[in-house]
Length: 620
Image (cartoon, rainbow, N blue to C red; front, side):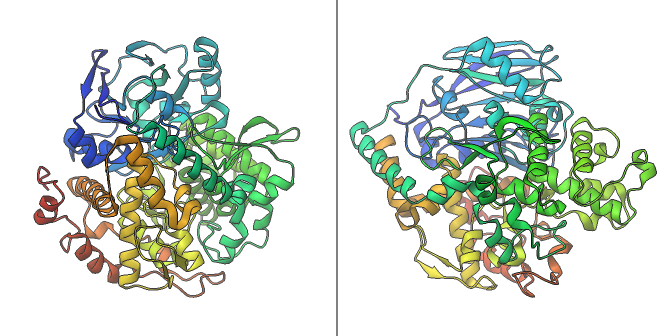
């Protein structure tokens, strides 16, 4: 028996409406773990360079991991993998909430959607029963409305993920939304657009099965021990959320300001998590399944132009991209934008980047009032932001261009507009500036999905200038402006470790909350769940296998060294701010990085490396 897993996934062919359960071998699970790793394996086997991301041949993979559904602390997440319509390469996104756990309770480790339904459909999974029904009555409704309908139809024990109007309109950065008004999402790379292209409006799960574990009593004791430690080490995150350090981040030069042009925002404290809590905007905190930290925000605005019922509040990335990056210093305005994105089903990071792009394009005359029916698009203007976000979600006016993502929007508008797109491989920057640390720059340039702070999660190390190593590398002080082996080795180690976390489905905040105890904690939990005695070396090699697998998919889709670059804006010094005159130099680090990874000078994994990692079945 395979503990911690069901050893099967559900495949649904939307062309025919036929579904089948497929067995996964223990060897496959051991090599790719689950979540991100297993999803990437299916993607590279079943899609390739000729696959249209919005065509019926693309697949949408929703995968849990061995920790999901076991009560192991901060291990209740799930991963969505597909070919991205935004980047044309690997698309993946990770989410908390309760959907992953409740999917596992139906008796499967994940599901794969292929083909396209003729009309809008709703998929209902109740243990072994799969029901695909007409969803024409749901099409056009926002994600909050869908949550209410599903609660009424199936009760509070179900959980549903769905798309909003942005996914229906195949906005290239549309996302899949879950948890209703609490709004948890696998947000990046356009997963919602793929779901919309398949005419799937919603997926509901309602299960009664509990996965078995190898050593339940030892697991119970370990859960008590490490849950307590996680909670004790995260009081600030629980009280103030992920936005607690906005002012510190701004002082370090890491905060996005005015489409990454400025280095200082004196009023940034007005949009911090601390202000959110102390101003009374925060109604309560929110915890994902199996979470002991509780960083989620639930906010309420009782009156005024931005009034909203209790619902998910802005996390740090949203504060950065819909706040400081747009020159907004009012939390209520940020929440207005956050609420639109959540209801419409759009990634707040890419949506914020698109609005900033439009503001700069209007400022420089690339977009004119005549093109947008006499309107204006001004920095910090709340009504302009409201109009733009809705226009993007519905693909109206200039919103149709912005819905393609900033890279393509720059190409469409022409002139100097491409300069306004701050992206890597088509994926817009999250709210951390690579000029604040070379390891941020290197992880953005080499990330397997485009600009991604979660790929290595090293921005805290760059800002604090030290790392404990978290049990998988030696503790060390770190020079954030180093362009040599220290930065390369640090980035690789954290990329490999984070690939494992996304495959085991562990929250990234567990790493920094447990600090040096991280690897000990989760390897012991893994052993008690699965019965596998994985040590540090196997953990890191498996992470390397998963990173290399995903890079191989990128290479198949045409990615080479020329794409491992930062945008032009990151080659310019900010005139003010905490990073001084630092400009990241990615090119000198690439040779060191490729050599350490066993890739050739063009960034392609060598045949020898593929064989050493048991990936000899991949041809590139």
